[in-house]
Image 1: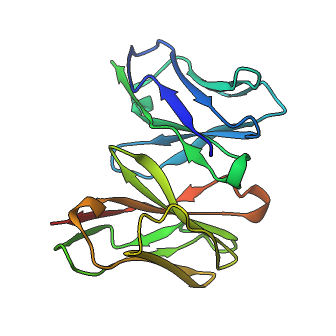
Image 2 (image 1 turned 135 degrees about the vertical axis):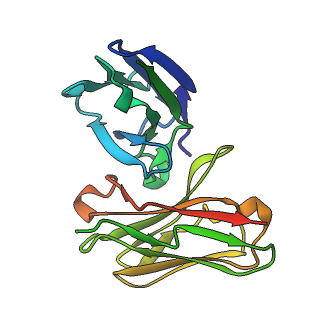
Length: 112
Length: 114
């Protein structure tokens, strides 16, 4: 089945700096790659997603890039703010079993 | 819409007791998922339903776990008997058929088995 690896496990940045979180997946048939944000004690919420027919997608300060050949995708957050502090999960689906498989998560801390 | 509603928010029970977690998906959603979140294993899919029918329960850890969806607006996840290693946050999520991968999560149930 699909295996999603996420790095780094923790990331600390200064307010205003950029943050990049990277994920790799194993199933070349996967075609949908969402990112979820989970604040402490809250539910995971979808913040951005990308399908395999595009290489990049932006939404204000966040962007996701996809490299299907290398089977990796990344989340980019620019001009980070303290409210960006949370756990971010990548995921992949569309491959065997067509189930959404999550990465282990990245704890992002934005220091003000 | 109030979103996906789960109850209870917190459950503390003793080993060996039966635990029932409840979920009300977003009205009109066709898919319902049960996930378990732990520090060690992250977010794991336990089971999912399409139009109230269980499609894939390969993530259910063992026979102590069971899930039902008697109608489009209600699902339960039952653990009997519960064990300390079942302690986790259990999330329910739902989605529309045309965008089944876009999950809307409930607030979760924090389960502690003593």
